[in-house]
Image (cartoon, rainbow, N blue to C red):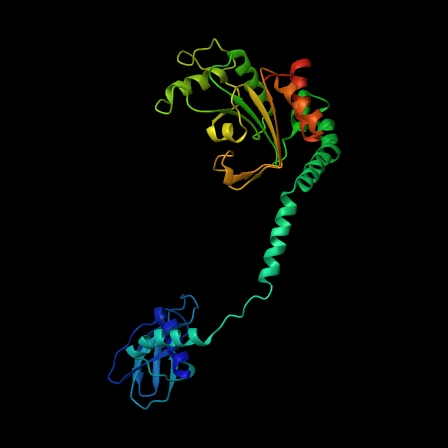
Length: 339
């Protein structure tokens, strides 16, 4: 075992070794830093030279000494540093490392984790409770309470009831909720522009416009780009090729999996999904293995987004929708500034 330990020690120091050759056997010695060099060797003494600005990281140095030398005195820059018992270093020492490692791996055993089974059960239980509709609803309710009771008053006080205050108070849907607005290029332009305008006003990444596929099929991207560009224009008469046109701050997602997941066969359709748990935000939210949804509610037909949200609120009792409805109604009835 001693031989095995020594072989491992030598191997661990191998990257720090330098060499110095005189007649005799090869040994290794300690050095105070990585810059030390052998100046000379006299019987049982080794004289090292070290630069003063070298990092003080201990190293190893291969030297040669007469057979039978049991101990060396090491001097650094002419000053005695330490005595060191010599251990023979040869190429076989490196070769012994694999054998020693194999021998130790057979003798060492890792005890079994006696809590593995119960720990797994507890983890599954905790995960199930966290994903449950009851717990997610409690989180959503508490988030809304904090926004309303803790932050709402401060925002109102600062902006003194301005339209900007209403927008800031709106916040966003909880991360566990989604509003999907399913559209297509066959819908009336005014309906499309109305949805785009509302999504831009809410500025909520969890409120999404969704198309089933590309206009004209997957082989053609330009028709889809022209369609999306057209409905995002604040002034529909503006020609982007002739002048700089302002656009609504909204985006359109192309995701046939979302259509399939919520069974959307005709558009427009608006879906409210609750207790959403997403694994990878880079993948489709319609992918079965990427997301779980507690409950969803759908309204078909050419209806205003504010009307659909109000219906969802009445049906579910969700307080999370109230700020969104307030922002949309303020923009429509109160002369709020469109985005």
